[in-house]
Image 1 (tube, rainbow, N blue to C red):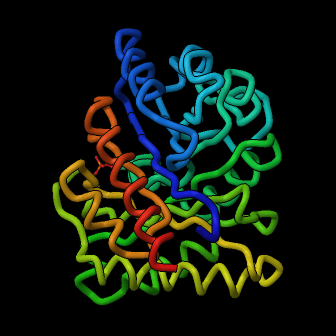
Image 2 (cartoon, helix red, strand yellow):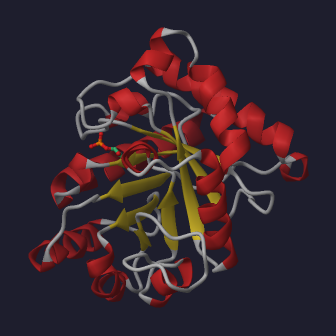
Length: 259
Ligand code: PGA
């Protein structure tokens, strides 16, 4: 297979108590190094223990957000280096729940991603249109603009992963058609080519996220444009997350066999 491995990421959002660490143990027990790259983004309170549990396995542990500043008087916030110190190797930035619930603009997302990269964390940068924008035919433009404005100049295919998450598909049980996902991923990829000409020949990972489940993962991976998935609700229990990981593994084997 050419290009990097598929990436299956679980975003636990504001879920996860001590008792839920057993799900990470179960995921660790169910993955193999020959499978896709796997990441779990628990709440910050569990990062340290999650990272200790996942140590030595293909499961990476990440945080769900970071502050743009390296340190200082920002009560309640966490810098990228604090997250790294707790054991995170990646961080999600620009999730639509941050963009809409906390008024974060692409400019803020750019600053946070930059802070993450400076601290040595991988950045999973989320973009995606609202329902109204999709209905108005604006999805490709909105996504292109968010890519252009959210990714810092120092981004590389090794350090940044873009997640296309249509806002209307998150937590709703709705998802775009496979051709619609493919079309937006192509837009994202052409923006990346335009803004990062130095990365020509390297493969950027573009994930899909929004109501991914064990039941629909295989069909989403039918699009060869999908380099992985960002999973919310269905990542909270190990069996359903492992089923999505298995779908990713089957998809990479299928893709490798048709090359
Ligand atoms: P969902 O969330 O899978 O529950 O729709 C996805 C996300 O917000 O990352």
